[in-house]
Image (cartoon, rainbow, N blue to C red; front, side):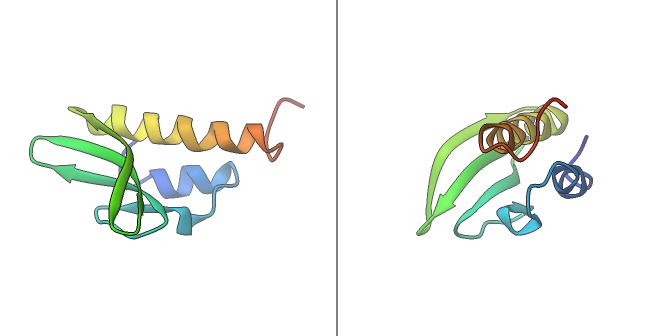
Length: 82
């Protein structure tokens, strides 16, 4: 998994594309940004970063974001074991 494929993969589990911003920052979205020699994942709201996490690997950052957002879909009952 990488920054190019994460939007499509999240869409496959029901996460709307407008919930995630890849490569930049936008309010009221989860952001996946390359920063220096690493990757950052965070929720941005009113110009502030929340639940910020930093990773040295693009794949690990993407898996973290995918897991976090997929879990939110499970909790709300949108996806789960059949």
